[in-house]
Length: 65
Image (cartoon, rainbow, N blue to C red; front, side):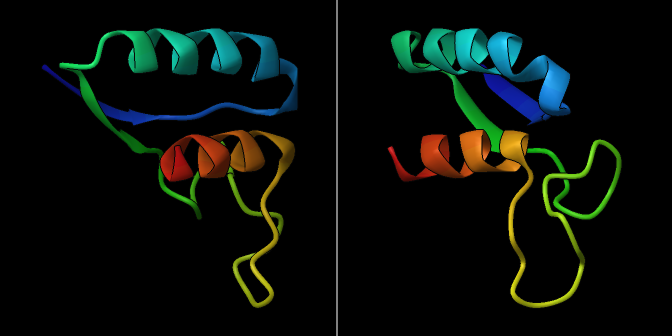
């Protein structure tokens, strides 16, 4: 199973944390992040230094796990 692009905005952080925990627990599930430059935005700006939004930080942390 592969979960396509997922993301959210700051008000979705609780849901995002729960969903990320689910994805980690279901180790047979692969996933990818939503586009960094499309709604919902995961970057504060499309130009350097490419700082993540709060939800982008969540996704970045999960990608590193």
